[in-house]
Image (tube, rainbow, N blue to C red; front, side):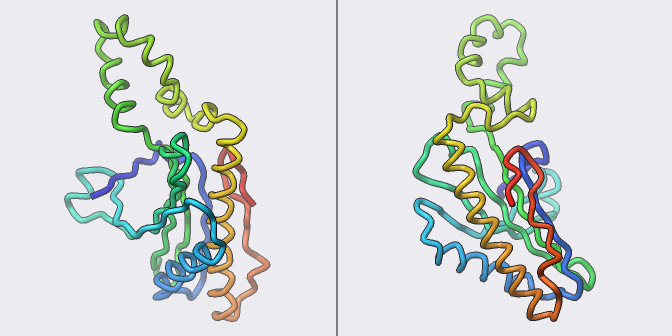
Length: 192
Protein backbone atom coordinates (compact mmCIF):
# COMPACT_ATOMS: atom_id res chain seq x y z
CA UNK A 1 0.00 0.00 0.00
CA UNK A 2 1.41 3.38 -1.01
CA UNK A 3 1.04 6.27 1.40
CA UNK A 4 0.94 9.95 0.51
CA UNK A 5 0.99 12.58 3.24
CA UNK A 6 -0.51 16.05 2.97
CA UNK A 7 2.83 17.70 3.74
CA UNK A 8 4.29 16.07 0.61
CA UNK A 9 1.92 18.06 -1.66
CA UNK A 10 3.67 21.07 -3.23
CA UNK A 11 1.23 21.88 -6.06
CA UNK A 12 -2.43 21.07 -6.68
CA UNK A 13 -5.43 21.62 -8.93
CA UNK A 14 -9.05 20.50 -8.69
CA UNK A 15 -12.53 20.84 -10.13
CA UNK A 16 -15.96 19.54 -9.14
CA UNK A 17 -18.03 18.58 -12.20
CA UNK A 18 -21.76 18.75 -11.57
CA UNK A 19 -23.63 15.66 -12.75
CA UNK A 20 -20.40 13.81 -13.50
CA UNK A 21 -21.05 10.91 -11.13
CA UNK A 22 -20.00 7.53 -12.48
CA UNK A 23 -17.50 8.93 -14.98
CA UNK A 24 -14.25 8.66 -13.01
CA UNK A 25 -12.94 5.88 -15.24
CA UNK A 26 -13.52 8.06 -18.33
CA UNK A 27 -11.29 10.77 -16.87
CA UNK A 28 -8.56 8.26 -15.93
CA UNK A 29 -8.60 6.55 -19.33
CA UNK A 30 -8.79 9.77 -21.37
CA UNK A 31 -5.98 11.41 -19.37
CA UNK A 32 -3.78 8.32 -19.74
CA UNK A 33 -4.47 8.22 -23.51
CA UNK A 34 -3.85 11.95 -23.97
CA UNK A 35 -0.50 11.70 -22.13
CA UNK A 36 0.46 8.79 -24.37
CA UNK A 37 -0.55 10.77 -27.48
CA UNK A 38 1.73 13.69 -26.52
CA UNK A 39 4.72 11.34 -26.71
CA UNK A 40 6.23 13.05 -23.68
CA UNK A 41 9.67 11.50 -23.24
CA UNK A 42 10.55 9.45 -20.16
CA UNK A 43 7.14 9.69 -18.51
CA UNK A 44 5.83 6.69 -16.62
CA UNK A 45 2.15 6.27 -15.73
CA UNK A 46 0.55 3.69 -13.47
CA UNK A 47 -2.68 3.27 -11.53
CA UNK A 48 -2.26 2.92 -7.78
CA UNK A 49 -4.37 2.83 -4.69
CA UNK A 50 -3.06 5.39 -2.21
CA UNK A 51 -3.80 6.04 1.45
CA UNK A 52 -3.24 9.20 3.54
CA UNK A 53 -1.44 7.21 6.24
CA UNK A 54 -0.64 3.71 7.39
CA UNK A 55 -3.39 3.50 10.01
CA UNK A 56 -6.17 4.77 7.71
CA UNK A 57 -4.85 2.62 4.86
CA UNK A 58 -5.04 -0.53 6.98
CA UNK A 59 -8.70 0.21 7.65
CA UNK A 60 -9.65 0.67 4.01
CA UNK A 61 -9.24 4.40 3.38
CA UNK A 62 -7.67 4.11 -0.09
CA UNK A 63 -8.38 5.90 -3.35
CA UNK A 64 -7.43 5.31 -6.98
CA UNK A 65 -4.87 7.60 -8.60
CA UNK A 66 -3.04 7.74 -11.88
CA UNK A 67 0.58 8.30 -10.82
CA UNK A 68 2.71 10.16 -13.36
CA UNK A 69 6.48 10.53 -12.99
CA UNK A 70 9.45 11.64 -15.06
CA UNK A 71 12.00 8.81 -15.18
CA UNK A 72 15.17 10.07 -16.91
CA UNK A 73 16.26 12.80 -14.49
CA UNK A 74 17.33 11.36 -11.12
CA UNK A 75 16.88 14.76 -9.45
CA UNK A 76 13.18 14.59 -10.31
CA UNK A 77 12.70 11.16 -8.76
CA UNK A 78 11.13 12.59 -5.56
CA UNK A 79 8.45 14.37 -7.63
CA UNK A 80 5.26 12.55 -8.64
CA UNK A 81 1.95 13.79 -9.98
CA UNK A 82 -1.09 12.04 -8.51
CA UNK A 83 -4.23 12.38 -10.64
CA UNK A 84 -7.50 11.51 -8.93
CA UNK A 85 -11.08 11.18 -10.07
CA UNK A 86 -13.92 10.06 -7.80
CA UNK A 87 -17.64 10.37 -7.30
CA UNK A 88 -18.77 13.00 -4.83
CA UNK A 89 -22.53 12.72 -4.53
CA UNK A 90 -23.97 13.48 -7.97
CA UNK A 91 -20.71 15.17 -8.91
CA UNK A 92 -17.26 14.11 -10.01
CA UNK A 93 -14.29 15.38 -8.03
CA UNK A 94 -11.23 15.60 -10.29
CA UNK A 95 -7.85 16.71 -8.95
CA UNK A 96 -4.12 16.34 -9.15
CA UNK A 97 -1.36 16.75 -6.61
CA UNK A 98 2.31 17.23 -7.34
CA UNK A 99 4.17 15.64 -4.47
CA UNK A 100 7.72 15.80 -3.24
CA UNK A 101 8.53 12.56 -1.45
CA UNK A 102 11.78 12.19 0.40
CA UNK A 103 13.92 9.26 -0.68
CA UNK A 104 14.39 6.42 1.78
CA UNK A 105 17.84 7.69 2.83
CA UNK A 106 16.61 11.27 3.26
CA UNK A 107 13.88 9.99 5.58
CA UNK A 108 16.41 7.93 7.57
CA UNK A 109 18.72 10.93 7.83
CA UNK A 110 15.92 13.23 9.01
CA UNK A 111 14.94 10.70 11.69
CA UNK A 112 18.55 10.31 12.85
CA UNK A 113 18.91 14.10 13.06
CA UNK A 114 16.24 14.08 15.78
CA UNK A 115 18.74 12.35 18.09
CA UNK A 116 20.82 15.19 19.61
CA UNK A 117 24.01 13.13 20.00
CA UNK A 118 24.03 12.29 16.28
CA UNK A 119 23.50 15.88 15.12
CA UNK A 120 27.19 16.73 15.32
CA UNK A 121 28.23 13.73 13.23
CA UNK A 122 25.37 13.78 10.70
CA UNK A 123 24.89 17.51 10.22
CA UNK A 124 27.45 17.76 7.36
CA UNK A 125 25.55 15.04 5.47
CA UNK A 126 22.27 16.81 6.13
CA UNK A 127 23.68 20.04 4.73
CA UNK A 128 24.69 18.24 1.55
CA UNK A 129 21.23 16.71 1.32
CA UNK A 130 19.40 20.03 1.81
CA UNK A 131 16.29 18.60 0.19
CA UNK A 132 15.20 17.22 3.57
CA UNK A 133 15.03 20.66 5.14
CA UNK A 134 13.56 22.27 2.06
CA UNK A 135 10.76 19.72 1.84
CA UNK A 136 9.90 20.19 5.51
CA UNK A 137 9.85 23.97 5.11
CA UNK A 138 7.70 23.83 1.98
CA UNK A 139 10.58 24.85 -0.26
CA UNK A 140 10.77 21.79 -2.46
CA UNK A 141 12.11 22.76 -5.83
CA UNK A 142 14.71 25.13 -4.41
CA UNK A 143 17.37 22.45 -4.90
CA UNK A 144 16.66 22.16 -8.64
CA UNK A 145 18.86 23.84 -11.21
CA UNK A 146 17.34 25.62 -14.19
CA UNK A 147 17.23 22.53 -16.43
CA UNK A 148 15.74 20.35 -13.67
CA UNK A 149 12.99 22.87 -13.03
CA UNK A 150 12.38 23.13 -16.77
CA UNK A 151 11.99 19.33 -16.97
CA UNK A 152 9.69 19.25 -13.94
CA UNK A 153 7.57 22.10 -15.27
CA UNK A 154 7.32 20.44 -18.72
CA UNK A 155 6.17 17.04 -17.49
CA UNK A 156 3.78 18.47 -14.88
CA UNK A 157 2.30 20.99 -17.34
CA UNK A 158 1.89 18.28 -19.97
CA UNK A 159 0.01 16.03 -17.54
CA UNK A 160 -2.08 19.01 -16.38
CA UNK A 161 -3.06 19.89 -19.96
CA UNK A 162 -3.97 16.26 -20.68
CA UNK A 163 -6.20 16.14 -17.59
CA UNK A 164 -7.82 19.46 -18.58
CA UNK A 165 -8.48 17.98 -22.04
CA UNK A 166 -10.14 14.93 -20.43
CA UNK A 167 -12.24 17.21 -18.19
CA UNK A 168 -13.25 19.37 -21.17
CA UNK A 169 -14.29 16.25 -23.10
CA UNK A 170 -16.44 15.08 -20.18
CA UNK A 171 -18.01 18.52 -19.72
CA UNK A 172 -18.93 18.71 -23.41
CA UNK A 173 -20.51 15.23 -23.13
CA UNK A 174 -22.51 16.56 -20.15
CA UNK A 175 -23.53 19.70 -22.13
CA UNK A 176 -21.57 21.97 -19.81
CA UNK A 177 -19.38 24.97 -20.67
CA UNK A 178 -15.68 24.00 -20.39
CA UNK A 179 -14.59 27.65 -20.68
CA UNK A 180 -15.49 28.05 -16.99
CA UNK A 181 -12.66 25.74 -15.88
CA UNK A 182 -10.12 27.42 -13.61
CA UNK A 183 -6.91 26.20 -15.25
CA UNK A 184 -4.31 27.59 -12.82
CA UNK A 185 -2.75 25.34 -10.21
CA UNK A 186 -1.83 26.37 -6.68
CA UNK A 187 1.81 25.99 -5.66
CA UNK A 188 5.32 27.05 -6.58
CA UNK A 189 5.00 26.21 -10.30
CA UNK A 190 1.69 28.02 -10.91
CA UNK A 191 0.80 25.85 -13.93
CA UNK A 192 -1.93 27.09 -16.26
